[in-house]
Amino acid sequence: MDTFRARQRITASAAGIVAVMALAIACGPRQAKVPVWRTLPPPPALPPADDSGLAPVDDIKMWYAIYNKGGGNPVLLVHGGTSNAETWGNQVPVLMRNHEIILGESRGHGRSTRSRKPYSYQLMADDWVGLLDYLKIDKVALVGWSDGAIIGLDIAMRRPERLTKLWAYGANTQPSGLKPSFFSDSVVAEAAALQRKDYERLSPTPNGYGAFEAAITEMWKTQPDYTPADLAKITTPTMIVDGQYDEGIKREHTEEIAHQISGARLLILPDMSHSGHWQNPMLYNRELTSFLDAK
Image (cartoon, rainbow, N blue to C red; front, side):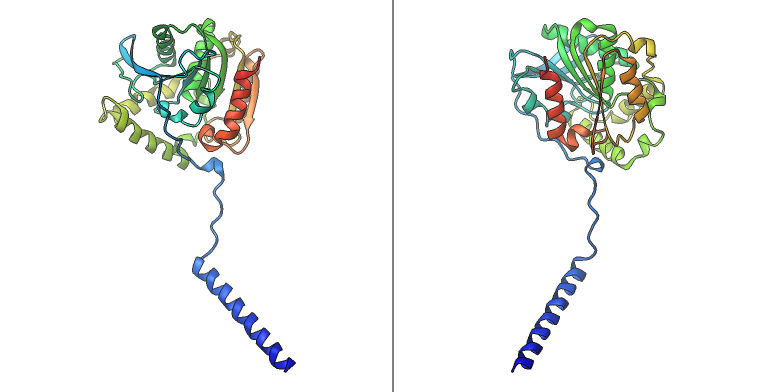
């Protein structure tokens, strides 16, 4: 009897092993987990704005939106090149708890128009200052990403009276600060495809993306072109930030920028790349709000 029961147990065990093996074969090999810094999780939609419109700035109409209007401690969010204000969907709901939030879109980006003037960071920085003039906002803390961070650096150099603080994520100050593989990286290519779709959905010239991208790319060939002496002019409290695995910006270049700005702090966020505000918004927002709210 005991021998019979033992044989039953062995048979049941063997059947179980076969079943597990069959399930493993059916499911196929386990896929390796993609690290978060190689992903582009889309941000949520922006909340309803208190005010929005098209501001007449220089020779363009510049789109803007305001959240928690009149809430004080204003923060200006400046998006990256070929992107638009919707990139800040993870940040606006958090920041508007304690700040008035101003979004805009650089000339030719998103819903803003553009003219025949060739692109330059100084031109776009002047547009953003013009937007603040139109909205009658004297000073802001500027949060910039990529081209937006470069625009922030330009304003800090030439119009420091308009800034209270500067958070610059993923900036370069010379074309040589970019990695040669930046524009061939698969994640960057995916981001570019998303931005093209956004352009076609938002732009007043939805069929003009090719010409727009070519104009921006032409600027990137030679700009920005800031010297250490230019950066030394910055007196605004500044945080130079980047992701640990930025696909485009050389780490040593980011470190040089922080070193060349008197009093600037350097922050490298772990397990993020060039689009860190999408990849780990909880950590990104925690560090950002800590910087903005510090006395």
